[in-house]
Image 1 (cartoon, one colour):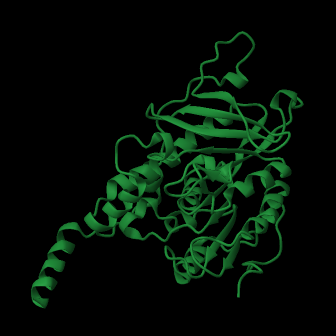
Image 2 (tube, rainbow, N blue to C red):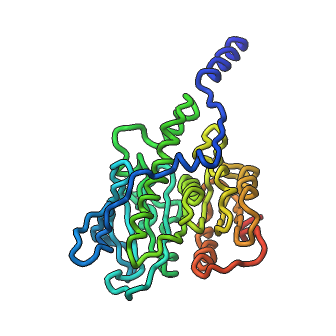
Image 3 (cartoon, one colour):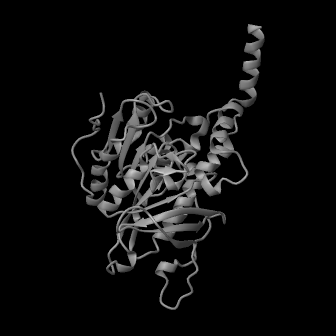
Amino acid sequence: MMGLAAALGAAWWMIFGLKPYTLEPAALQARYAVSAPHDVVSAASAPAGAQAASRLQLTPATVPWPGAVAFDLTLQSFDGAKAVGRIVFPEDPAQRASGSRWPVLIAMHGLGRTHLRWWHDEFRGRPTIENTHRITPLALQQGFVVVALDARGHGVRRGNGPVPSELLENLHLWGAREPYERMIIDTVRDYRVLLDELARRPDLDATSAAAVGYSMGGQMALLLAGVDSRVQAVAAMVPPHLDQRVAAVAPINVAGQLGGRRVWLVTADDDEYASAKHNAALFATLPAEPQNRHLRHPGGHLLPAGYVDDLVPWLQAVLSGRTEGPGPLRSSATP
């Protein structure tokens, strides 16, 4: 029986086991390219009298922070798909002084979540245990405009296909690599199109944006920075470890290209999705620059609530552009 089990296991591995592969930097960049021309004019920046044809449509929304002004958004992406999300301004953009531009913070949610986790402490009775909703008001207080999209296959974009967790199960059990990679890659491409549109607005500085993400969102934030130079700073919380079996979506394959960026990696030493060793290897792959930080916490994938306060210096440093002292810096929560 043991011999039969071993034989069956070997047969399964030969048929379904994922094989590692490599991608040269140019090939990786090509996977995330947005080839469709963006020749439409944003409604917000259209000249007087011009027809406002835009990939980005905004409708007023509400958020719980006094003074903030929010809009739900729909975005026609590179392939015609409709992305949905929200953009929140620290004050009424209609009152913004001419020539003054807000910095942009892109917020990316985790697997199985939605963009609503950046605005609300609960959704359908389930709490936002990642505490991402606490990051948004801190960013608004610093003067950022915060924008988030639903990832492909999430929220109202789910459609009739497998739920995101099933994509991971199919990846590991049956070697179904392409659907998982496609979800990540095309979501990152959605954000590239979003940056194109935001850059058309005269009140936003989307050519020097920052990205923050939790779990899968941390993974995508690193990938977006790696393929789009407009993202100049990243705060990645507990990104999962991914190896060369999914090379196109493994953050370690873009980490070495993030020279000159301000990258803060926030990890947990007992994370079930990325070991302390894997996290250290990811940080070590980043260019050795003083503005980078590795903040380590005890516990698992769900970080202690205090990690949010640790990000305030990152937000402030992004705005000031200054370089602090030597890194990596260990969080006060680290044993």
